[in-house]
Length: 187
Image 1 (tube, helix red, strand yellow):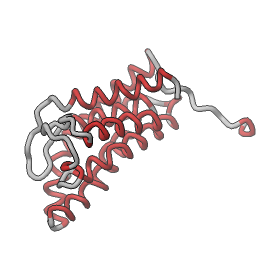
Image 2 (image 1 turned 90 degrees about the vertical axis):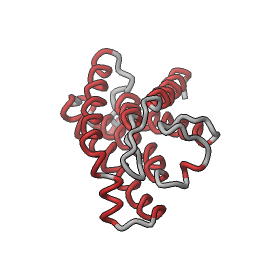
Image 3 (image 1 turned 120 degrees about the vertical axis):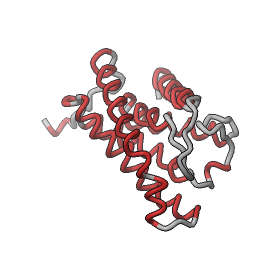
Image 4 (image 1 turned 30 degrees about the horizontal axis):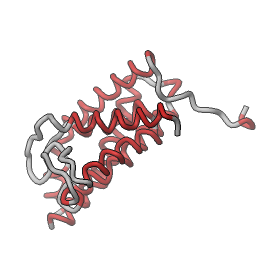
């Protein structure tokens, strides 16, 4: 990995941390935070591998005890609580967003980017977060979906759009993701 790649990974881990300074909005067992915007941006701007590593670095810093989550939490407790599934899904979400963005690189625009962010940044996160919330909190499926997904949909759709708009501007002005290379035999 090049020094520039390491700098991008560290920068986006810092972006996610800074988004944690925006106060969380408590709406039940899981708060609304701006940090999922950082997860979406990491994948959309850096691509699959670097986006995954940026979010993973952020989570390692949280696990080491730095109070970087929007709730002010740090340490291992968040990784076994009601929000654990959401945290575990973040690196996967960044990877999926980055992978899909790389595949759509030549056709990337705000609409396509928003759809990519919805798949990676909403579907993936909810698919991991809601079942873990259900298991950890002992909730019914209805209660888990009502408390762990429904209140977040409008804000997450907005974040998906914002991340796509920013990624589109970055792609056109200072592309971080390199054009996907075609295999030599695929020409």
